[in-house]
Image (cartoon, rainbow, N blue to C red; front, side):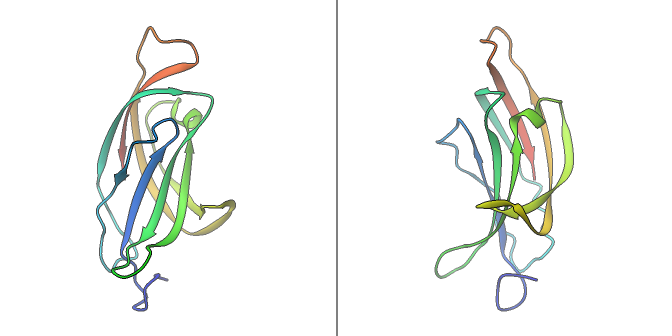
Length: 131
């Protein structure tokens, strides 16, 4: 069930990463679609605390007039990314109440590398996100 009167949505995803406040990543908008495939790839490089934080994928329905509608979020803790490359479906949840799952999932692929000679709490993140 889409967010628009037509029963469809114009979805896009915004990506935010704890510790990287200036990063503003966004997929392209796919018009009139309930099963979008973005195939967008993003690469992030920087330092982060592996014990704290997450990558947040906020799914929206683009609206020509007014505010874009939230369709939910996917939260991926940094700790889950430490295991190495990851490709899986993540449930879309309510952004302000993650225990409430919405209909739908987001398939994400992560590949990353860790740098060397950094303090024990920090790791160097060279991450690729494919949505």
